[in-house]
Length: 268
Image (cartoon, rainbow, N blue to C red; front, side, top):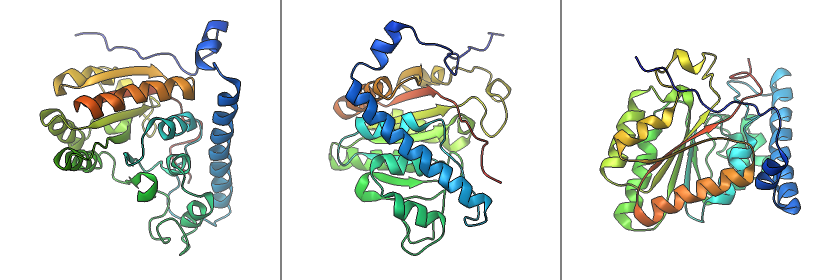
């Protein structure tokens, strides 16, 4: 049996001077990215405190540690592109421009929340800003995202759909179904696996026989990319490449982003 492939190490222990120049070429851009990531981090920390005080009920999945992905996504997409997210969705909504007030009100179940207080933590939705939903059922949003991409191909609107999932979703049946149709029909879509290697709490090597998730791309006819998230700039640029491939040639891409979640799977 082939030995399972191992992904890039994480978190990074050190960066060389060449790494720093490559990942952080412009001081003002770095500061802008830092402020945006910090804004998301502070929102999540505030939500965590409110949850422990009983102000927020239900489930609460924090994006702490993965903020760079959301900020990079917001810079990579074009107006009208669609983002379909997971239940860990606050950071993505904030990065795409959803106001913090309505986002927090949604967590509190208030009528002035992002979706009127009826969606809660896992169902953020802000169509005007490209946020086409967080989805609570693991893996079942992949066919939904494929449907968005099919609509773009059918109407010729030139838009691209980005579909996010965690590493725990890749064994779910609808993921395979949605990816198969996306490759078969040449849909303008990019699938992004935010791989923290632990799903809810199980190491990746115990859930998949080959840890390189992008190894599946060839069977779907996708392009692929796999890298450790170390900066917003590099993540944005690699996302842009996949997005433009989908837009210009309607070839899907499967991207595996090696990241790390600094908090548990959910608050409890």
